[in-house]
Image (cartoon, rainbow, N blue to C red; front, side):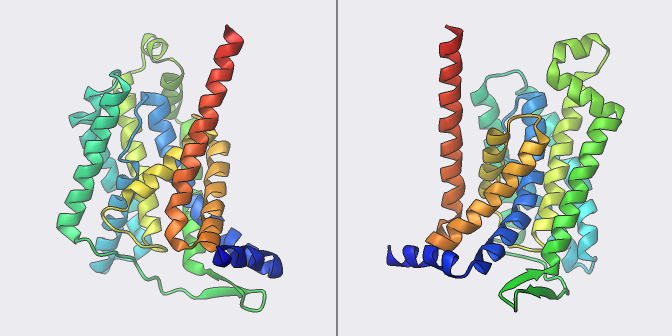
Length: 303
């Protein structure tokens, strides 16, 4: 307890520590938001709660890491991971996800949980259980007389995440497929009446989500560690962000992602790095309780 109080006191005695924590949190949160936006697409369009979301992220990270070991420039691993995970998502949709659309919640959760286990075990068999990362040959920027350090690799990661998110948003607003996805999300039956092939839309949406996660994982492996069984941590964060922000609310997804990133960093500083993941789980429980209270209040109003 004394250690916790001392860490809190440090935040007030040296305000520059808050700058360091916030900057780290916002950079991490930007990547959380990208992965969560893919989940929001699948959840909103297909009504599938994808428990394998984080495992797609880790798979994309391993694609980029493996290519880097073969001598490919790490930055090129991002578009390649996007393409590879697109293919993985399409295959999984045809084999598994297409069979659970329209089924009950438990069926979709069980199917995607099985996919998560399968991906993690395949990655473990191929690459082993050791943590991996890509070391980029970039320097670190220092501010406030060296008290705040910002690795250039992390800045590059944030820029790439922002570019990816912007590209997806423009695609959703300007392209015919993006318009078809939005129409299907609003009313699948009406979309079919209007001549939209909803089966094609579903396959495209799930593949796009997998590709977004793959690109996010390729960025993550350049600034943090990956391991075959780390996927659950990114799945939990994605669910927290989407549940807090709501489906189809991109500004909310971005804000929630940045906020969760910052809160995790504060939790790690105050309670220790070992409790960082516990902060994400606690936030998920709090968000679910708030949503449950809101639903009860709405039902009372309708009565």
